[in-house]
Image (cartoon, rainbow, N blue to C red; front, side):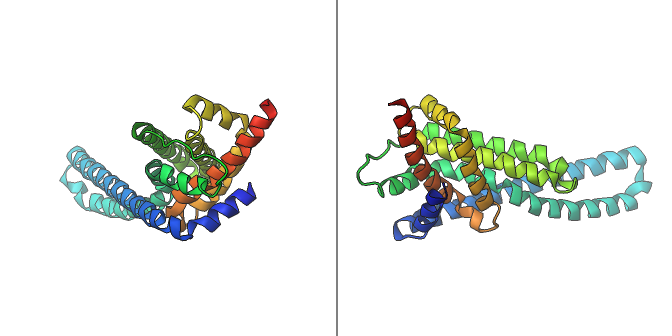
Length: 239
């Protein structure tokens, strides 16, 4: 597993990967900005609607203390939005991964000249998998958020959940180039411990600010190498 991770890291900055790296990082930034704008507008709408409701319920005398509360809420929301972007990065990279998985996977597979290349995923399948895991990542973030104030418990929960989701997504994207979706999922389940261990490495990668924008490249390359090893082992056991 460590060997597969080292190979993925060494390939990331090689000339064939640089164009994909720049494209995937740029798109990840755009996705994060869109998410940030959406969340900011949602919070602004909630604050405005809440202020109108409170003022209507308490009367005009509550205007001054209400303005103070809104000011405090605005600062807290800005800080929360910044922190939220860190936790929502896995969701953004999950969306990007589906768009570049085949391009990245093919580059990695070409480093195994004696073996055939995988078949590209259909666009609907790639988009379905990406959206599914992005929504799961957002759901995990929302579930972990209340626990963030409990001695970092939420951060630990989020890290392990991210490891599971990222390992699952990137492995299945790599495996589905060679197997039907049902077989790819079965292969992942047969090696769930190893795939989760790989997910831990991807979760560690995605926890590094700025660098984590390259998660689609690292995650896909890493899991292509890991799939190669697990597939050979799996075939040997069932031979």
